Image 1 (tube, rainbow, N blue to C red):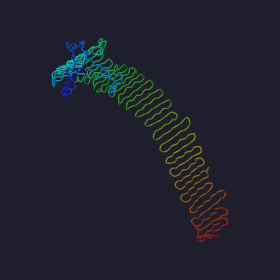
Image 2: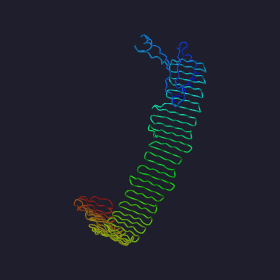
Image 3: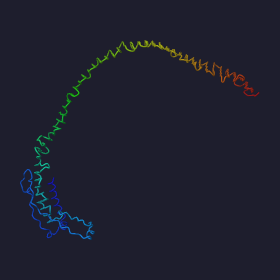
Length: 540
């Protein structure tokens, strides 16, 4: 990169020389005033042959231009120039004092203490900066320095030689599209790379012990890529791949075959054969799948399956097997199950159940037998409760505290301590529960009573209605209405023969009566009396 930068600098100087001739002429110092510059000896590297490494020689000493002496400044001059008293003013860099000779547009000569530039446009560009020398004679370019050498015959040949920071050396040659690179480092460290772009690329690198440290290979036309390091390797060649990450390896031929392994496990996948296998040696488990068949095993269990027909699994304490659609079995430490299209059996501890299309039974806390949906019988040995049913004709259940019957078509009775009822649907409903009782013969007779609250309601529709509480009685029988009540120990009543006659005693000493709601009537309340004639009240 240093050599290419020098070439670009030379070309840029030439272009600037053509466009800024007048400015350079004005800024350049007169030739008569420029001190004579002694001839300099070029670095030995520029004159030597093209070996693999640049010659480490030192050029002849070139007298450096002396900086002008700094004159003493008076205090007035220091104040004018803005220099603090006693301070030394800063002078321009001596390298900027360039002696420049320009003969446009062909010749440019620049001389300074650290740089010499010669341009003969368009045939020659030569520049020396310290010990670095650049030369351009199109199409040839050369660069020499104590640590690097470059030769270019553009665009057919490129060559670089140089020293590395660790004391090694490198060499690169390019004859497009072929390239070669090699390097040597401390001890046995070395490496190389070569290729034919864009068809082939290869490189390797060895460490100080001479062991291979890394490697790469790329062949684009063959879709091939390979890289190697001690901890990782990857190879891709068309559909083939190989990938290693320390102890973990995967490889295959996509999409036909895939495999891999590490320190404790491995796997295999063959998609066209619907095959998969994996094994974990640390856990002692494996799984194999081949089409509809698969098997899985662990340290404590195993299974064998052929979907969708056969399934089996077992472990240290249980086992189950299914042969579809014929049967399914399961067994455990204290449990058994059998299922088939014609029977079901399950046992767990002391409980067992059997179900067939004709007969069903259960033994345990409750024992029952059935021929569903017609017959059912159950018994509870611990409580003595039992149930019998012949459906849909008869149902009976009896426990220690209750007794229930149901008989076709609609007779239903139930009794338990403190309550009972009898229903003949949909007409008769009778029952009691504590102080409450009821009798209904729908839709004609309704009787509801609560002995604790002292209330009762009786209806013989549509002629008789009676509602009573401890304080009052309301009764309607045909067109006869009776109302009585008792408040604060005073009893009152009234009755009506609707609509002809009404009679009432609001208090024992009060009385009232009327005919046709007041056509003729009389009312006495305390000392006040009133007579009605033709609905006209007359106070007496």
